[in-house]
Image: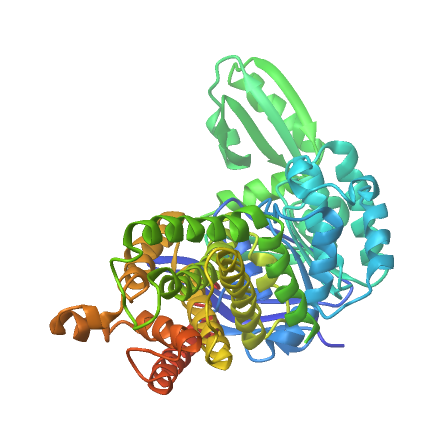
Amino acid sequence: MLPAIDVRGVSKAYGSLQALSPTDLEVSQGEFFALLGPNGAGKTTLISLIAGLAKTDTGTIRVMGHDVGTDYRQARRSIGVVPQELVFDPFFSVRETLRLQSGYYGLRRNDDWIDEILHHLDLSSKADANMRALSGGMKRRVLVAQALVHKPPVMILDEPTAGVDVDLRQGLWQFIRKLNEDGHTIVLTTHYLEEAESLCTRIGMLKQGHMVVLESTENLLKRFSGLNLRLRLVSESLPDSLRSMLAAPSTDGEWVLSLRDYAQVEHVLAQLRQSGCDIASMELSQPDLEEVFVSVMRRD
Amino acid sequence: MQGFLTLFYKENLRFWKVGFQTVAAPILTAMLYLLIFSHVLEGRVQVYEGVEYSSFLIPGLAMMSLLQNAFANSSSSIAQSKITGNIVFVLLTPLSHIEFFSAYVLASCVRGLLVGLGVLCATSLFVSLPLEQPLWVLVFGLLGAALLGTLGMIAGIWAEKFDQIAAFQNFIIIPLTFLSGVFYSIHSLPEFWQQISKLNPFFYMIDGFRYGFFGVSDVSPYSSAVIVGCALLALSFAALLMITRGYKLRA
């Protein structure tokens, strides 16, 4: 089966800034993929290149087998993008906006589908409201609706839940999850890592324009398996014998030690006792995606 | 085709929703020009034999309003969409380069022609105007609107701030229209300034347009049509090149 997105050797520079170093990425059809990275890592650049909003310096990108440069019309028919910026056209109502967006894709009578999207996104009561009159969360949902009007097989959501309250966020995810179950390929960028962990089957992490992680969520969490022991010491200084277990440099006087298993807790306590260190607080936890993310981003 | 029709419809709807500002206001401005200039100059200036100054002025005013509004439509729409970011909704779609270009330019033509027609209708209540060669009126109306719609598109794509659009309008469009013979015939100018005026493409649009009404012009309407047509082709080529390459649209 053709990959939904096939990125090969793609790079992009803006002046002297290398926003994206040569990158390969293949997203299969039906996949729920998360693209993570800190601000400025190159996520939006990569998305813009896939969506044809920017031109590549090197490499090729295909969406559902269509080259985004040479076969741009078919490629764009295959993709729906929810942009990160909260943009809207102040001249139109929600329904007008969605009808116009349908028309750009060659769809004349699309009201049934528009009504269905509005219903799922809890926007039915706002269908005739001007875009200017909507709250930030509602505008964000209209962006999702706009990306869906032409029922694209591939959806890219660039931080779709930024500024959306918890209730609406959950409703939105329920809807996106349903789209994925119906066969849509979803690519998501988010700063809410728990969302990526619970929704996405595979994760790519970008750091300074480089794809530093590209594997399944399960394997990634397994690779970082073990336990984290968070310690605060009265003396604030960690004995030298425990420094080899540090998961990350200390922040705000908190030490995070990486343990293989529970048996190692005893060893840590013994070392602390031997060095005369008093414990102010202690917490044991399993690493989540956020810790994996922090750990990956702190690596050289 | 449907994509083009939608963008064309949207661009018309966009200016029509603020019709007071985009259509009624320029007609009123043209009426004020007519009121003031005809009051001051009527009986003192005769440009063509047997043609009153007010009658001479009206085609120029109509064409000036047409050109300025055709320019304003595409330039403000594209610049505004770029600056606010909502141009992304058009750029993400499968619209071809030619559809994108034609929709913006044709919507500019609609606004320009609507304003031009509005000026002619409103002024006809006060001054009678002959219509010797209506086909030339139509030809120059269309060519002028398309040329300025295309120029507006180039300015809109190029501009990164509203200031730059205003500068384009204030330092290029308005001087070129005012110095193109809207208010006078270039034959009333010294030889040197006549030659300078002939370098101004706006002169040919207004002169040819006026020929349609009076059957008299400073330059043959055929020459004017060729010059304006060539300018339109050159600007269309430039605009399409910008769109195809994604200049300032697809960074």
